Picture 1: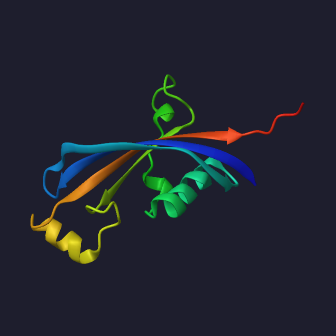
Picture 2: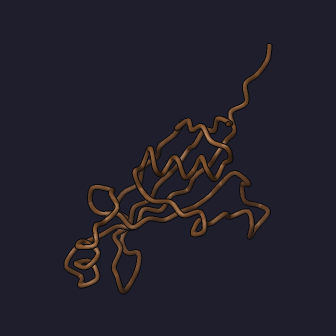
Length: 121
């Protein structure tokens, strides 16, 4: 197992079922989350599970440097649909959202992962 440090910036947007992301309503950061994992992607998955209590599917993650070598190699981006409490919406909430009777939000994450390497004196 390796130790990883995760720094994450989040942007929150109102999300409309038919029109997608709307107005930016919030932003925040979580820095210095230490995660023990076998790989950087597993560290991100554990971060979502243990820190955010939200689902994470690596197949839906966006890795910017795969499209442009100018982007940081340690960055990953991910988006979740959340309710007003920043939790995964229930099926009942999703049904109301689809009818435009409830507001849900897009939680867009910009995550940087660092491997923590002990130093020797």
